[in-house]
Amino acid sequence: MPRNKRFVPTHEPLRDHDALQIQQEHTSGPFSFLNPTRAHYRPSTAIKPWTAAELTPSDEEKGTLPGKDEQEVSNVEFKWRSRDNRKGRHALIYDPAEDASTAKYMIPARTSSLHAISQGLYRMLTQYPYWDVSYLVATIFTLGSVIWVFNAFFVWYPDVNPMATFKNEILVGGGVTAFVGATVFELGSVLLMVEAVNENRAGCFGWALEKVLEGGGKIRLQPDKGGCRHHHTNKKNFVGKSDVKTTSLSGSASSDSSAVDGNEKKSRTTPEQGNSWIWFPSARELKIHYLRELGFLASLAQLFGASVFWISGFTALPGINNKMSQGLLDGIYWTPQIVGGSGFIVSGILFMLETQPKWYIPAPKVLGWHIGLWNLIGALGFTLSGALGPAYGNSGAQYQAGCATFWGSWAFLIGSVVQWYESLDKHPVEENGRDG
Image (cartoon, rainbow, N blue to C red; front, side):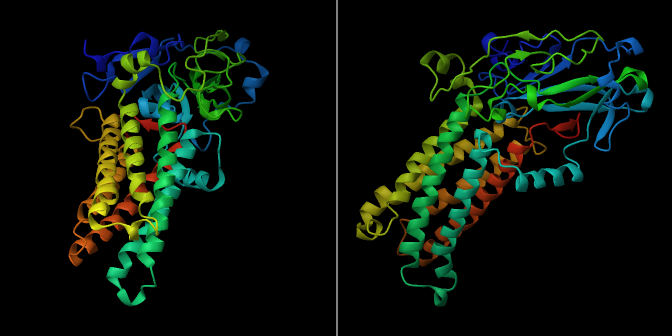
């Protein structure tokens, strides 16, 4: 069986959740020689209506009708994606109910609706989970992209409107912002790598199941933030460890609700997988897992690109850049831009491929795909700027180099803002066949 159709036993997600059954036909990845990047899980326990004797007082208070942000559906599955797992996200997919008689579940509304999107934008303005490494990665790249937008104005606008140029605008304004922007990108890339090697290997369901007596014994699924096993929710720990010690179907540490068969859920203690901070995996882990993991390879390419690109940011500083000969500029200023930008290109492509069902089938309905796409566009702009830089005596080439930095920095900014939105959307709900 190809590697992308099965998980290595020690890295199979949700293996501790006995009531979730993997759907092997949905386990896949874009390349046969790399690890799977997506899988579907279905509740394996049959649904039964509950009786009044099984209903507790706390259950009666939860309500039996869908709330204004809920919907009734006929079937639900948990959609595991490698990118979602790194970001602490828990995707739920559903089949709409034809009528009330076929509805078996109550779940939150689709997260691609206008109302859900507006809520996501509001979260970006009101929530600041500084302990969440995925949030930090997104916001740091957003800050870096904003700095590069300022840099683009400094280096390109003088060619557009020479009359508005101030003294040493390109040297000082462009040089300082290039150094700061490259440094911020380097920091974001380091955290991106930390995120990749501290993934939750055991998987996290992330949803709490509650029983509803009326309406045929439906199951209500709600985000289980308190029972999430990802490190993203632990305010006392940066990455690598959650604060949940016991797991059940919902991944919750408690066992006060009832399972889908009407019996009490049996919460059991399980050893946390990958629960300690690591800066870099062991040689064995690299061989059996990480070098076959698209997300890790993409993060590694990003870190390589940012590290090389930082050289050009450093040599852009005034007092260094204006003291070098043209040959030295070509070697340690423009060349690192080309090499570093190429690393960004590889990273953007790999992040896109990670979200795709096949390497040749785009995934425009997945947020992560758009993040990779915009980062790829930005990388092309930065690489093109470096490639045109050595033709310094050509005014047309100089203009296009600055222009490439301009649209490249805006592309990075768009991708970073979308990643910021994604980092706060921890429980996406998608309609099967419609949302990706």
